[in-house]
Amino acid sequence: MSQQRHGSTPGNAPGDRAGSVTAFPDLPEATIARLPEYLRALHNLGEAGADTVSSEGLSAAAGVNSAKLRKDLSHLGSYGTRGVGYDVALLIEQIEYVLGLDQRRAVCLVGLGNLGHALAGYDGFASRGFKIVALFDADASKVGEEIQGLIVRHIEDLGRVAVEENIAIGVIATPAGAAQAVADVLVDAGVTSILNFAPCVLSVPSGVDVRKVDLAIELQILSFHEHRKASLTALPGGRSAAAAGNQEAVGS
Amino acid sequence: MSQQRHGSTPGNAPGDRAGSVTAFPDLPEATIARLPEYLRALHNLGEAGADTVSSEGLSAAAGVNSAKLRKDLSHLGSYGTRGVGYDVALLIEQIEYVLGLDQRRAVCLVGLGNLGHALAGYDGFASRGFKIVALFDADASKVGEEIQGLIVRHIEDLGRVAVEENIAIGVIATPAGAAQAVADVLVDAGVTSILNFAPCVLSVPSGVDVRKVDLAIELQILSFHEHRKASLTALPGGRSAAAAGNQEAVGS
DNA sequence: AGGCGCTTGTGAAGGCGTGCACAAATCGCG
DNA sequence: CGCGATTTGTGCACGCCTTCACAAGCGCCT
Ligand SMILES: NC(=O)c1ccc[n+]([C@@H]2O[C@H](COP(=O)([O-])OP(=O)(O)OC[C@H]3O[C@@H](n4cnc5c(N)ncnc54)[C@H](O)[C@@H]3O)[C@@H](O)[C@H]2O)c1
Ligand SMILES: NC(=O)c1ccc[n+]([C@@H]2O[C@H](COP(=O)([O-])OP(=O)(O)OC[C@H]3O[C@@H](n4cnc5c(N)ncnc54)[C@H](O)[C@@H]3O)[C@@H](O)[C@H]2O)c1
Image 1 (cartoon, rainbow over the protein chains, first blue to last red):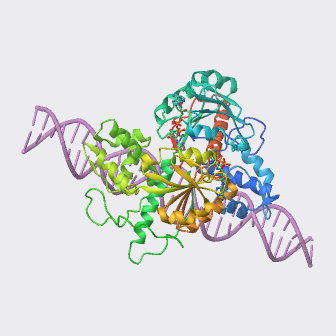
Image 2: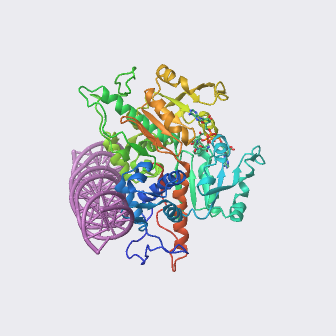
Image 3: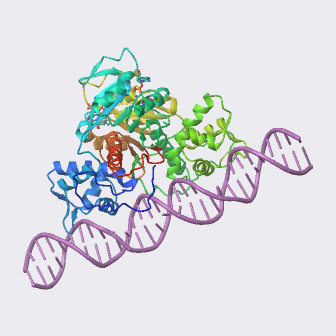
């Protein structure tokens, strides 16, 4: 995704000191994508009463290899105790800090159709470090509607509201044809992270991150494997099963 | 334990590709994940009136590197013409065949709450090779409800209906606590591909593919980059931007 | 026919990520 | 106080993926 010169690392001790804007250890992208999964598993374990957990236990709960887990965690410093494991509460705190979840981030949602309504009503946002602070749509008949305590505003107000509410993340749930225009509006308003549900490629200036969730793509990938599995069963003397029926994360 | 139905249409290759289509080129997983994106871009180009497209043009439309695109296509025995490019219609046909989209796959949806309703009403399924043929829920007050022309059935009927309708793919949109139980039911019914929207790890036998879509994880990854960007701007003499703000697919 | 420009397909190199295997570190107990 | 059991942190090797760079192929124009 991005990259900037690695030449000389600006002496950032991964030490600790959460206090302020210390530079970041540059974590591998693959590791970052797994941290949220570890976090979720840790919350489950914590609620179940566990004080500490071994890499073996946590990796099982998160569905990954234990060596991978240890290496991931080692990237953000040593917070484990050999012979014992990891302190659940401390590790939660650390991962939340690295992910920037210690401050609740303001999110806005654009496009309140079918999917937008579901997202607006999703409580998984609030419980995982985010708060939907504004809803926008271009359809006059939708503007003014109240959803989950928020009033749908016209997209023309996005620029002003984004600044007022300090919105950092925008979620696009409009048809594909409108998505690029919406992205442009978001970028102009200073939003630097976008989650896009519309099936299209967005073009944004550098410095803005875009992640895309495309349901049809997920299904088509599954369809490929169905196709492949079907053709294997038709083969003579085929091995009965593909060895690796593994959990596959969408991320990678 | 599972398996095989799939009666109709033995191995009919589309178009003319002569020869045994039975054996599959084993495509790199990364390539498979990109094929749907190429397919979408190709459909757009086709509707825009293009007959052929160069790797440069298609890769731009799909948001990837052109060399990567060419290598991906070469893996499936590409049909480009040097000096000209790729025939749009032919390439669509080829990719759809590889992904197994030439046969419309039957999908069932379990859990008709907030998200389930949105998914049931999504027309992106039908237009991309899938058909929702059944809806299931455990809540008696939901059973019997009609959504988009389908009646919500009780999950106890899943086993029977799955066989009747030849369902290959199941979508889970229940709370996390119920997801594993639902997955077990799906597997017992012979479903070999699962798309899971619940934030939890599913355990399934080998031979069954699971893909997971977790909205909160996507947001948390964005949050990390926000955090990192914020700490960079605080650095002395910081360059204004990271160079390549690229599109990131969730799959990844 | 021949030359020229354009585009594909691919060899090769480098980077990244994964997983093994083990040394180092810590705890509990005798 | 020392020893064994346990678990972390990591060096290393391997394989996958990406990217560059270029020869080979194709069509068009002269
Ligand atoms: N419904 C689903 O389950 C689902 C699943 C996956 C992906 N998607 C994708 O999500 C997007 C939304 O799907 P949907 O089913 O909710 O569609 P929808 O048509 O129900 O809703 C789209 C909403 O966007 C609004 N809109 C249109 N142009 C706008 C603009 N320029 N600015 C602001 N708002 C605008 C419309 O007024 C409408 O309210 C689509 O791109 C779709 O492909 C939907
Ligand atoms: N709403 C969203 O936008 C959203 C976004 C991302 C992820 N999710 C996840 O998707 C899942 C569903 O979310 P939701 O908001 O629709 O929840 P919801 O509570 O509105 O709906 C859940 C539905 O599942 C049904 N259900 C419960 N147990 C069942 C069982 N054993 N068998 C069959 N059906 C059962 C319930 O009756 C209910 O209809 C959750 O795991 C949630 O975390 C939701």
